[in-house]
Image (tube, rainbow, N blue to C red; front, side):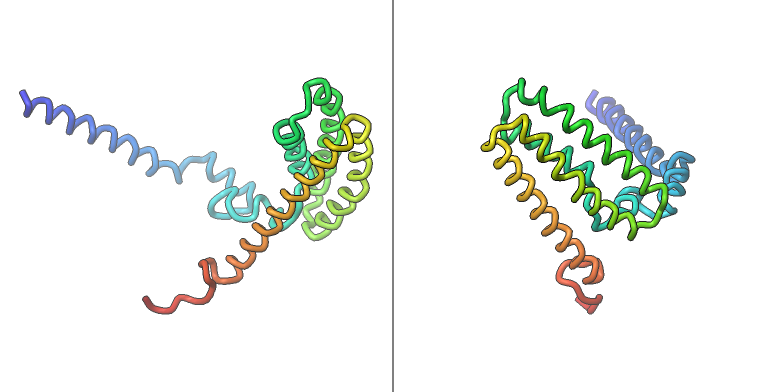
Length: 179
């Protein structure tokens, strides 16, 4: 009886293992993966790496999204205030998304970076003024502080990643030396 149970369990384990091996062995040959790689410029690894060409660039849509998350969960404003703030966030996000789509279509990443900075300096004060009408001074101050902290963390992370890349892709930098 134990031998029968052991044989059935071994066959089940082998079958499951076979399914996983077959799944991963055929993954590289799927046409949808090849199409995705062509859309991303035939880079290995898909989205990993430079995030679709925006390496080191500020994403204004992410700034708006993160600000909404901070407003909702960190500042913890009431539902009535969120309802009033939502159209402001939505309009700003749509404006940024339209501009980013336009800039991506142009394909000039360096020009895109300067245009994003212009967009942030022109739309940012308008966004702040609109929020000032909805939020209290304390809420707005807390939201701005959270946004500033998030940007500082992102800048530090970006600097660490740049140091990592410059160091040959290994922590501590340098070449390959022997072990």
